[in-house]
Length: 231
Image 1 (cartoon, rainbow, N blue to C red):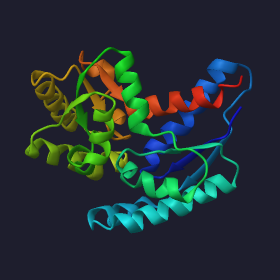
Image 2 (image 1 turned 135 degrees about the vertical axis):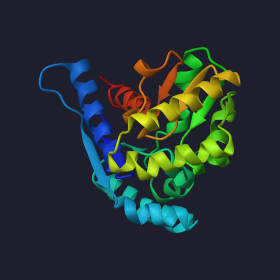
Image 3 (image 1 turned 90 degrees about the horizontal axis):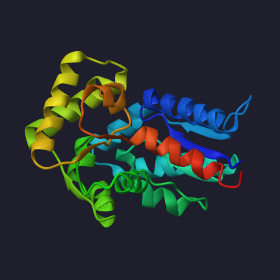
């Protein structure tokens, strides 16, 4: 079994999901007392979030690159950045380490194409929805990506940072997300990417008939598949 490196803490609520789901999947596949081999370094999200909103991405990238070096030094065979937004600095992290990164957008695109879908809606932070580092990666896989209107992007962004990253799940916010999901579906989106690792805390497949792509679960599943390839 390969050792999975988790660069987490952004937020810790979603990192906890990664840790739990990866271990549950390994137990499901191997049985008995098996669990995953994991190296986890968890950063202080307050520091990273401050750099994000001050547009100091090089400094944020340097901080995550340093954490990634610790993960590599501890024996990880490959790395997961346990957040969609900070894949903006994935190239900076890649340059700092010699182990490969299992890119979240690539894993998500593979799963969408396996479902035979072409046009998808993307929900996430404003950084993820508006900038090209994530959407562009998806379009490189041949996907057509649509995002909410500006006012709805602000709603999604606010709920993520002010509620979900604090572990606060509100029914009213779920209703707002479902309204926005329905709007994207009306624009032709065949499915919706939950492009922030906390969104699954608020909206699950049981809440809508529109196909959802939970990036946290997809990333965890792909990590286990890779870790057990030699099994």
